[in-house]
Length: 94
Image (spheres, one colour):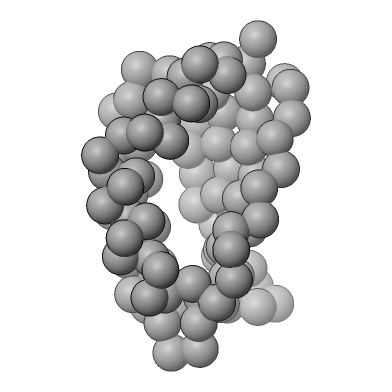
């Protein structure tokens, strides 16, 4: 069953541009994954330090595989310096 994920991502003050660039680079790589049906990045109008990622995956196994991809690990290592808080995830069935 397909799954949707909504991720709310908050940048540290002064790290907004670096985080945004890192997220844009990540989007291109994730969209190439077999299980990825949708991977869209949005920036909050009210709070430009907040980003929202809307994801759709073929199934739970595809989402689990996504989380283990090398580009996700690379991004995680970089993002620890850019994030003001842990990423807030909400997963729903489509």
